[in-house]
Image 1 (cartoon, helix red, strand yellow):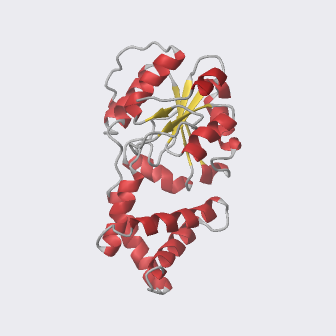
Image 2 (image 1 turned 60 degrees about the vertical axis):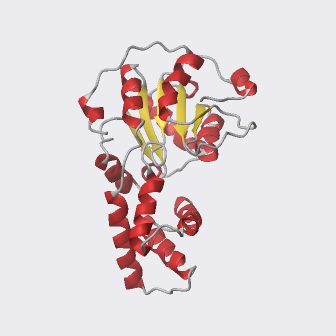
Length: 257
């Protein structure tokens, strides 16, 4: 169910939404599930997921800050994870385990079930679409290709390619420029309240938080909240008065299932 405080409705900028930006990981692609599969392949189970998640957050922040490159981050994260349990790995062993984990994770890459129908509806309704994601370019494009997202978007904005990452307003400005749409006519949807939804609003876009957790959203949330992408068309129609026809089944998007 869509939720938003009255203050958000009152302050929302006027005019139609003509373009939609979408985050990739844990918005379109179930990155958490594939990461857990990689962890299970690495240690035989995923019981240590909270430790892996915390270690990932620490090391990924260093990558986004430009302190380390992506491959170094991967190896340092794996080394730090095993060190948490008292196992000190050689460089060769870190590389071996990380390769094994990465292969298992990539085999598990999948879109959420609500992605293809939502993208079909957005295309049929005439929206321009962009992907806006924090990741290395080659890695993220490989991921998108593997799940059928290549060629779906009018613009693909990847932090590793443009040199700036969410929540910096500049990455949203780049997306709007590539779409050729003014920021107040662009809606950004992502699974991170701070990095995606509120950051987009600060950059002059509309923002929607995709919260798949099932936990009720806090009332202080200053942006609309949806529990799945199947709720996005309703949000666009009800809040922005968009009219649309039932979308055709396109070959490009059917392959994303």
